[in-house]
Length: 59
Length: 316
Image 1 (cartoon, each protein chain N blue to C red):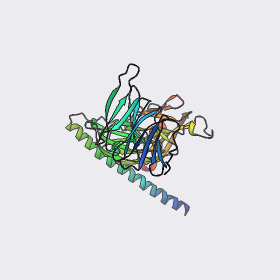
Image 2: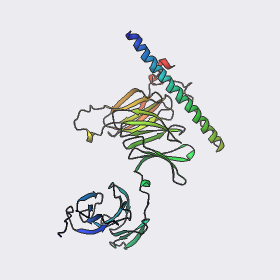
Image 3: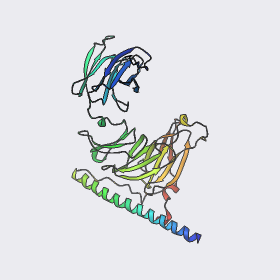
Image 4: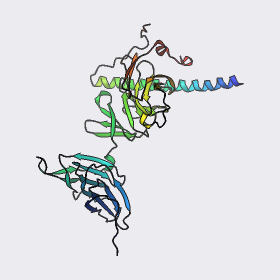
């Protein structure tokens, strides 16, 4: 029973975390699009995004 | 009828003024203090502290909202009558011997003393009629994106968004209950983080001041930084030694706290400083950061592999 309770709590927490991540990503998508459009209108180059996914870690 | 004795000054009186209604008396003295009294019973309403020299002159505006004083400390001060707060200080080369509001309260004159090669002058001071516009002191500020706005963090915990070109205030919020100590923008300036003496840090959208995230800690914060690689923020602070009554603080206990930017959960700490952490900056490549402490040291920390590999396993 205890383990079931634990699982359900962590499921709730997991859902909460997922929701926060999704909300943040949706918001980022919106503001990044708005900023890109605004920069284009102002004749400015787009902001170079750092490539964090393929970053090389030197051991 | 016997006169009422107003007891409160400790040195020679220099000027007395009634307000327009006559219910209040303002008095100034060489004791550097302004007193406000009820005229009908002589009870003291309050004092205005801030001058560091004899006060020569005082005047109150027609609506009894603003008080102006002139002092031997070479300054004139504007005060909020009700709160007792000094709203503005004008500095001069010599003592200010007389001050007076104009009929419409939009200006005041100040007579400065002739002394030591300085001629005596009569200066007209503009008075902002809107007390609300006398904002609490700004402590920190950043530029918004595309150089359009500036964002200011204030002593009272408020944040304001300005169009700097015409000085227009676009928005203002009061999200912190203590002084805002740092304000740092994200890489693209679309959002920013604040740190506050109220022990919390918060993230807001730059152009709207919409609150997005809040990180609540157990120590007054002096700095907050956004990390470019991981979705973290780094917070630093600590109780000033002066304010700690017992010396329970272990040496090197002052820590930079890492919080997950999106999940608002603390994920780790980096210790080392022997005093409160005053400032934090992250390397543009996100692979290291520096912290500056009250102890006089700058510590440059390079992240190890665990930092880059950090993931919430259940989320990936």
